[in-house]
Image 1: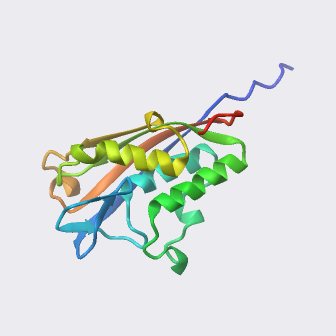
Image 2: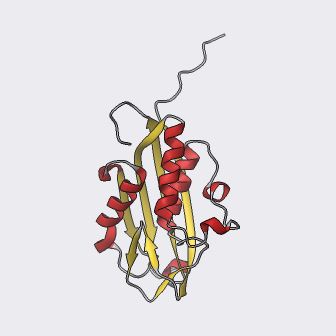
Length: 172
């Protein structure tokens, strides 16, 4: 009988989140408030980008999903800052010996134009996760007029994350 395979030096997860655009809410993506007449509907601050990244990290660690840890039925998370939820996920990873290796995320939004905010999003997300900004990549794309994103009815975010064993002296 052959020996068991060596464990991988990393783990990979993916996440996705979608929220409807509604009047009377602030638009927050990647922890950055973006001027826009509509915001994302949700129990927390509805930061679809932070939620997708959180799901990707939880998935990589085999810890379920965002709703398992921060249910929308729990009043403690009403209007919660999603960067605080990401920080809690980072702590969960650290408790299990993992750190953030890399995050790559895409936000799908017809409007507003997100390019001017991407650098600040990366910084805020990395700060919440305790990793360097170069470990977090954020891209923006439109729906090219197609589907709910293209009709500006909502915003979607997709993310992949790699977690790696924590080593002494490494922030992530």
